[in-house]
Image (cartoon, rainbow, N blue to C red):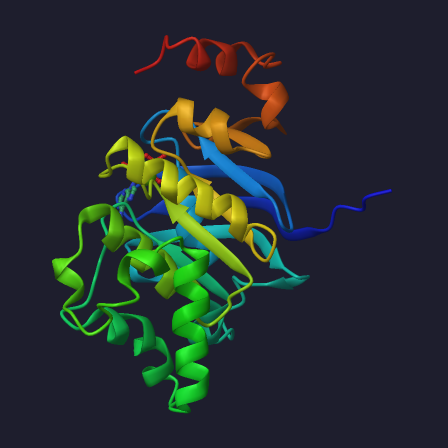
Length: 255
Ligand SMILES: Nc1ncnc2c1ncn2[C@@H]1O[C@H](COP(=O)(O)OP(=O)(O)O)[C@@H](O)[C@H]1O
Ligand SMILES: [Mg+2]
């Protein structure tokens, strides 16, 4: 028997921005460990807001009010006393546009170690090689680690960001439309490396298209205008959704 453990449990989570936008209403969602959980739905549904809540990036935005719980391994990340720096070390994030630093490929990867005061060359070298393998980038860059990261193609830069997000071995990787700027081949490379990564990590992703959502989802949650409409196994929800609104979206009747 396979027991599925919930890595993240979101309970009655609501969030309102300062301009009065009620971006999420009473969200309840269990996110299993070592799976790919997909948040999908039309723009404005609250996918990015929910992802940012998990590693407290909304702290930096204009939030008026939030309530509920987001339990990571049983402890609430919304606790005001929580150290967000160590939280973000446990929860890596990759954004739509690759954000490479104006340094070499190598230093882009070791920058997190640098900030944490870790200098042991054995740890750094091990991390570089492991994270580049896991991000399916090693073969392409192993002979050019000292070249500027900016010299890489867009797809390679995004895989470098993925490698950077996992080099310190977080528990969870959040990805917000990570392939929206990539060509189809780079997109598939990123998807393949995510499939590898879920053996070691819990992945939560807002895909850039419903086709991608259907390709990669183990579990999928449909968000519409701040509400969680339906959650199910990927193999079910994209072929036989229960809620009529999910069905309409999958059939392409929402923008
Ligand atoms: N920083 C912000 N300030 C005010 N409103 C915001 C902010 N970010 C997002 N919103 C609003 O919250 C709602 C959800 O947005 P978002 O989480 O970006 O959805 P999605 O990622 O599904 O497109 C939208 O109505 C959006 O306009
Ligand atoms: Mg978004």
